[in-house]
Image: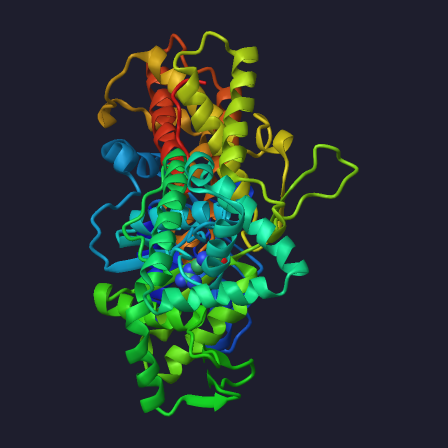
Length: 570
Ligand code: ARG
């Protein structure tokens, strides 16, 4: 029905293409404003008329159309009132026909999109800042994949840099093979913190660390062996977290991977006359921002040098349509700078580099009078992600024991719900916002949370189970029976699934999916509250169940897009 409306509008507004019209059409949730609304603001400039006048003119041109019962202009909007039965039918028929596949295009036919996310630093703990990158990146991966792109997930590990020099010195001074083998990252963190404490008293330590890093860069075997070992230990722990989160990477090519690939890029920058030498360092000067540092005075390369090199490598290897970087907002300048360098190098595809920044996470202190805890690796004041996730699972298990002790497979459910709560909480607000994580908020089953959406899904599953219907036959559904207010609102919500995905992708904003999930869950709960489903009237029961069936799939897929599991019992 929306497609038909797009056709009609397109005929009457030739200057806008169908896709633009499709994107502009809104579905007002308040039915007094119609079932579809078309805003005319965009046309005002081009037609040099007020959008209010334009709305009137277009509405007159369209006149009456079969499936539209009424057209009304309200300010700059044209509101279309459709035939409810047809509306329900057109919305849910494809959902029934396509089942779980509805709205999820797994064809991978639209080209490659790279998502560079998570990217923790080796030998430093995986903290909740990286959690945000991980869950946001994973969600963007699934969102773009659902739109038909072939997504490539890259973990640009921070596995090179002066911190390894520090770690080697720290290891030699304060640790042992056994301790590292036994305690893993915890031990590496302990000695990393200790190094910084000691370095304040003993100024030679920093120099020793720099020397070790230089050795690494020169290929010193002993130093490189240690580095490799630290990397393995870290990766093992990261792997544990990725498994819990159900996140996979296509590539772990991190910073070290580009060590032997930077020289030609630096040469290219020189050949293109972009390099200026300043105080021995090589820089690229930029307009309206500080220069981008390419090599330091001692010749060593930087984070940006590796990113420029990696971008070129990725373009060659994957010919990406987009390369998306998910990091904390603090790295904004870094990305702006080196994107500009790519532009100066003459690569048109600088336009396809996208930085998706997110705000900081802090954790509400147990004692509420204390400030929330920030994260600072050097001071050791970090909340390990692993601990956070395990705590979430544990707390959820306690809730299950209390509320539903006979639930089957409690451990799996506790894992899906506990982790779902954290993931959801990370993406419920516009991602640029700072968040303060609170246990009671995230694990609330009634609030706007992951568990609430999961619980709604499980509830819908339970209704379907009781009905024993395996497959819905469209010809047996009397769509007129699901045109009451609550049903229509639910149909509208589930009908928004595809546009929510598009919107989230266009804005790089998984929170649109999280909000959408809550909207669907709320509409379903209202529908469920207002309408008995398993009623004696067979026709009515069948029609309502078909709507429950569609909603279940939409909720499940919505959770999937967020990277959250959908247990069928809770
Ligand atoms: N390792 C970096 C950090 O922990 C993030 C890397 C992001 N990716 C990139 N290509 N720069 O902050």
